[in-house]
Image 1 (tube, rainbow, N blue to C red):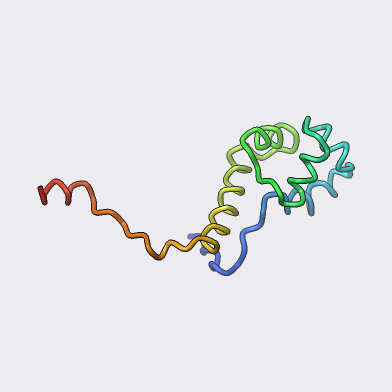
Image 2: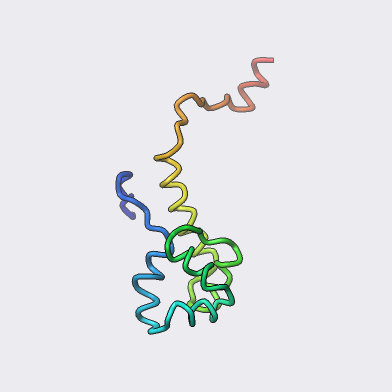
Length: 107
């Protein structure tokens, strides 16, 4: 059984792994990597600077160029986005709706 991450530990943006590990290992410039992905340098820079997340199209590009499935890249992004949302959103005024079966019995 996997241990769960402590909620206070940030979930890294997918760009962190790419920027800090994969790009240096590939020995490519960011410009060459952007070209390999078929995106502009600015698009890549925005992603690597964590200003943009992994879109479906970027996930497919990453799958083809560096490996790991598009689903994996999107899952990394979703985990990061959820971690941030849990800290930024105030949901204290929301309540769970009753189950549909409970509503039918009450009628």
